[in-house]
Image (tube, rainbow, N blue to C red):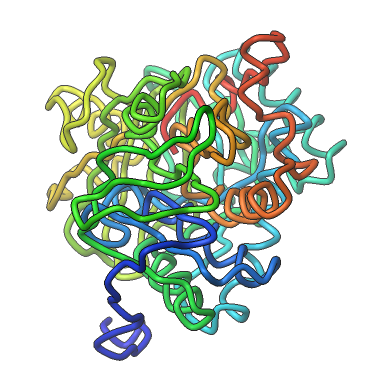
Length: 405
């Protein structure tokens, strides 16, 4: 199975010391920070930039998620940015010259109640109006897409049908980060690890630099791409973000023969299951309800998602849990991200993706880079400005993001 993984050299990027100043500094060396740096260099010619990561690149949520990629969101604004992201995903393996195992195997969202059915059919109709590939499947069609799924009418929550997005799928998360990092490095971006931001230098209401454990760095512009820790950084800069940080757990089994052909998600039974390229089952559910920054969570969440998985997939009843982990997700009140200008001049913020951050990686980077380079949002991220929490123009995606994915 090792033959499936691409060959790569021992070092994919330089490991430089920080320079005294940069045109732009990006705080956060995860997928969104790396994608922002790459698109700033590629699309806008800004190469005197640095990505600061307090630990190691992709050591946060980028390698602590379950790798699902889709764009079947309800509202026009969400569908637009996620569909743009999916189209970028489809080009990235060739563009970044790196096989990160992008697999468009489809995502199946199950309906178990009449309300589920109504909401699902509504979402499919909205998706079609926005040019997103989506279809409603009856029970027999669901069984055809995923033969190992339990579609009996004798279980606690029988499957009544489901939505299916054929172009959706998965990718290998750490390889995605390495691909972006390598290309950004080739374009001249400094990727600086073990560099924790401890404060910001301001001239009035204008940011002019960052303080780090490796010294002071002057910056023309500063972008925050730190997911669950964004609110901590914003507080240092003198403003509040409308996000809460929660642990989000996931788990994998030991390796099995490949039997699961797609990605199956159930908001009602509350689990989602896919099978990675090597054969391990990848499972997740909802966030732990308490706030926190610990990269682990409560056992009962794992217990409940495994029970739900066995209910939907009796074939997995004897699978053994191999490893669990947690990420820190940043959740807004409308379950949609914040991508745009901060209240501090020359500062930009990208956060609030909640459980949808991985799938949004290239789209977030693309729009964030445009916003930084032009000091104005791209039309795709303009609706996701902080101002919406004042105007009330919320983009409520709780229905499309009710279970972690």
